[in-house]
Image: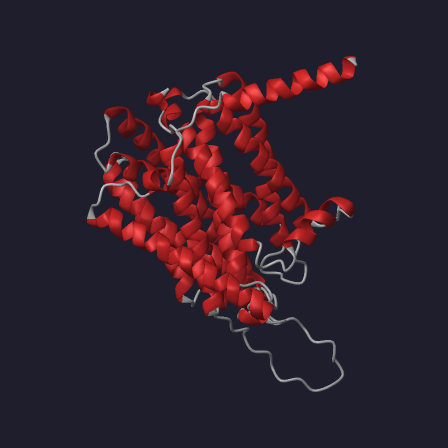
Length: 407
């Protein structure tokens, strides 16, 4: 009897907690209600087009399976893996930016905490939506992830940690909405630590590839954390630019200027990392490493990654000492293009060199570089993930009060 009463009390407390979460009741009419400027109409049409592509791409995948993709036995990881990494890196980066205010107590960054944490939830959900149609059996994966965990598998740890990370991010966001900063700090810190563990583990998925010497080693687990922070700052500039229509109030200018200075340091470190990665790759002329590194240096996507993702934003920051906030908005848009190519290059370049065949006593032709180009289905699902991200974020701006001054 006492146990039943206790259970009822616990249920009532949970219901009361959920019922006190502040949100705005919205419908389809509210979602479609926006300022009809050319820019907003263009983004709305683009979002709808991306969502339609997602439906078409998923339908084609469900009919044809992995034959709808451009992948092969020689190149088993394709565009969807790169886009998944793009989204989860963005999520971790936004988590780091959001944690600057509510976890570490830097008051200037409190104004972006809720928006960044909500963005981290949205981006990882978009990443899950994309990867669900790459792994083959997502429902079966969820079941056997629990029933038969692969404790020696980096990919198992990645999926498990990201699931835990998402849970903590949602709880932290709820406490931020309720303005309970003490509990938000506890769950935010725990979520941040789990997110960093998951993200470095994602880098380990590439670092553990002993057969792919261009990736193998300790570089990627730390590189992923660095590029996550950079990506998070880029997206913060983009979100704040759209929020204030590039007419930033003084407190936003101060916060974004400080972020730009941090970004300048992080990009400089990233350039240092990339330079030494390529130098150590080429040095010694090691087979399957030096030749791959030399080939990467001759490809256009690599130089788009470097120029768009690093050099152009860094020039904007250095030319104004971080004070050109409007310039950094456009620089961040350019930077996100570079970040996408960074993720695509990471996946594709790892598989450039074909692995040695088992027939070692017979004559073999010299191996060629593995060629890959995403299929229309992969492109549609990937753009659909971006559409999901834009739609969820827009709905969130309507349903929740994401600004610190709207308690």
